[in-house]
Length: 240
Ligand SMILES: NC(=O)c1ccc[n+]([C@@H]2O[C@H](COP(=O)([O-])OP(=O)(O)OC[C@H]3O[C@@H](n4cnc5c(N)ncnc54)[C@H](OP(=O)(O)O)[C@@H]3O)[C@@H](O)[C@H]2O)c1
Image (cartoon, rainbow, N blue to C red):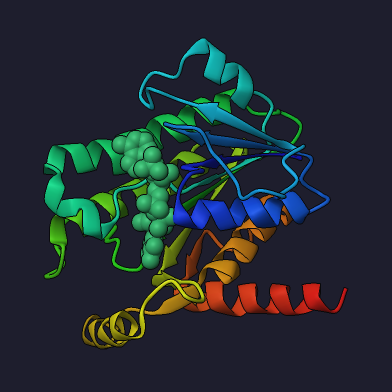
């Protein structure tokens, strides 16, 4: 199968690509980003193609050619909370919402028509779909993320089976050695105050690859689902 990883230069996407390379069901990976996707030395990149896109609102014909015939996309492009201060709300909306809208529309129109195109959107636990309920913390951001989730799910619903979609509402995504001890203590306090979960990057990557390869079960995966499914998959891979 052909998998697109959008936002392939990012933290989560890098782990998704590492695991996708090892997955025999995935025969082609399109690493889509605004700059080249570079992996560690020694990683087998024979089924990976780095595709640079300089406009996520109007895809060039060259980029569209690379996206054509894909079976699934895992979409990771977004502004993360730490970047919010350096951007206007308009820019955040463009990257988190407009890019996602154009992404699912463009990719699904170019997709292989043999089976439904699977679009997997990573959002955050705090993404609020009900646009009348502005959360107290990062309210505007939470509404934009929730609006993107709703668009993706409604687009799939209206596609008459051509597209199936899933939103992964992740808590804090961690990796061994990612945070210093002090930062991880601070984050534990912040998470307790705002009620945010935590998932390992290997667990979310394993879960989303499984959805892309084997089909989408639930249209919304909560943080606890990502931990449960991902840890189970990683455990079973150890025994293979
Ligand atoms: N990390 C977490 O703890 C966490 C928790 C909950 C949810 N999530 C969600 O998981 C997803 C991935 O997060 P991450 O931590 O992997 O983020 P990340 O490392 O910042 O990666 C984000 C990706 O989006 C791309 N991107 C950002 N702004 C862009 C723009 N203006 N134009 C084109 N591409 C742009 C980045 O490209 P460049 O590399 O070129 O900047 C990168 O490829 C996001 O939706 C995030 O909200 C993350």
